[in-house]
Length: 323
Length: 190
Image (cartoon, rainbow over all chains, first blue to last red; front, side, top):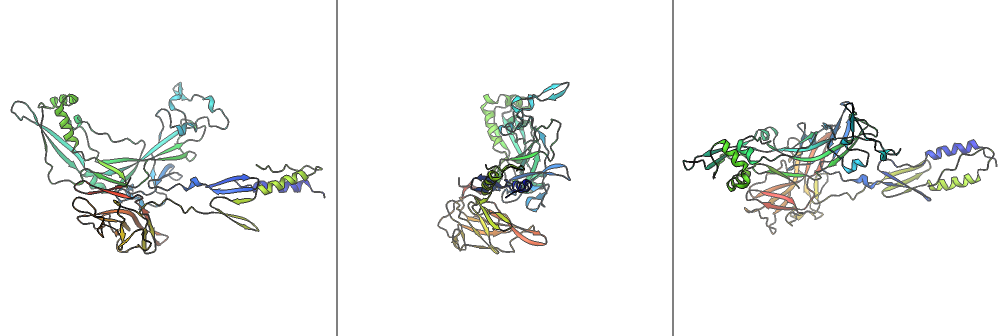
């Protein structure tokens, strides 16, 4: 039987197109007996509280993030003043992205072609990337850039300010220190009990004031406790330049630091009617200058240690924990 | 693995290519793998993915019915809370949902009402030491000597003019408590 070559070739084309390929959440294994299609087990990741999804918003021309609802003390936090459970689909945090510029990138991204920003050098004021010969393989990217944004939880709590008075206890030298704490509630009053989800270009852990700052009153209590929830990394396509800004061609990769719902408690839950001052009999000399000197000599001064311990004991700083 | 036979050329035999095509066609049969269901029809094969029912649930997992809710096994200080006098792991232990126990924003809290003495101790022998309740606020009306710990939240939402109630799980762990002299704190039991 004669068989026309053109007929044969008309069959081969559609057959080739009928070949199964792995799509979303699917795996394809080819064997001599058939092609096995399986669901991708990795796609069954647990959708935990605080799970972040980042997406490019075409109309707003920026990257947004949505957060799967999590709860702090049984309440969903707000984004832009709206509780998470009341948000419309597609509403999210606008991500204030900033370029990675902190030395070597995390190993995960280094393997994808992100280089240390400091590996570049300048010619006539313009940064030029060093060409790493190991990346010259045609199948690997030459250079990719990394931008990031952090998402944090903030819970308002009472703030603390205080004033230290040195009283001339013996009539000859100031050796009685009176610390009068005062509590501020402006942020608690304005926000209420709900936590707030915020996008910041870089998470900064809260700094604890030292004794000198407390004594001089130069420290302002932020009246909030913050927790780093997630970091959204944006990876550029291969071959991007340093001037490129993240757009829809970049790949979002959220990294999570919180996976469970949370409880939060501040050390001082409500303002007492009267706050008794803390009185300490110390060897402190009278006057601000002497206070500074004494604080600088703290490691050698047991009295200062006592003052420090007493003042730290009245901090309103709170704690988060998993529930 | 199996290559498609080459294109035919005029005047050359296609027997070898035919055999290669048969081998390829056998290898191209679609077979069901994990969580895949196939339905063969004369017009083609329908591929369906079967969802994994073995999702992580955790302790106190709330399973919503139409007007009631059941909770998965969970403990607080090794005490299993009760619903209507029955331990929550009892298949008949169901908490009836009350429409009146929603706040003005459409939220309602389901949780454990813990009764403790003035030193924060929970009596494991007492009938009502830990019971599952529904409340219209985070405190669920807890009085002195009581502490309400939410394990799930219900939220009424309107989708396409149809009101639905969605569940959101809060608690996933067995629990323990600690007393600081003023209030009861609830933690995961390691």
